[in-house]
Length: 120
Image 1 (cartoon, rainbow, N blue to C red):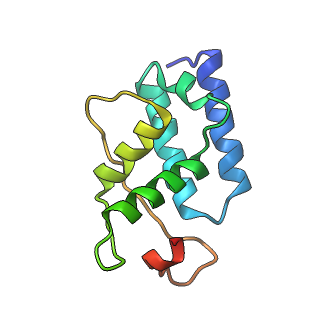
Image 2: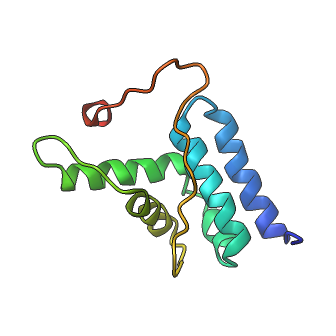
Image 3: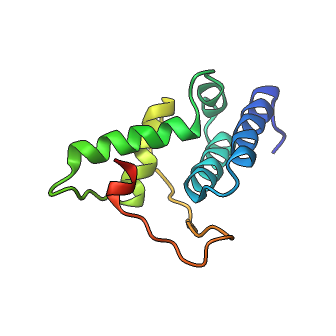
């Protein structure tokens, strides 16, 4: 499918942010997910091009939602819930979220270990 100028610009914006944060597996996963949305949802490119919205800021939204949901300092989202929060943040309307296979390992790391306290 041929990309229109808005789609190209939105993908470039995401790729630039992903390149700035190559070692952040979450930004990589969400960036790839959003690129897929641009290809599927006509309005996604325009939503992503909103100047003040970034993948990194979408993670802040998730962090804040996790704080609200936390019980005894612990909260968890399913992939569907997490990606739904990203779509909501970017104001992208989607009838069905197709959750991609996500690999959250970072090439430099020999082990991935994260706790909610790391985000608080």
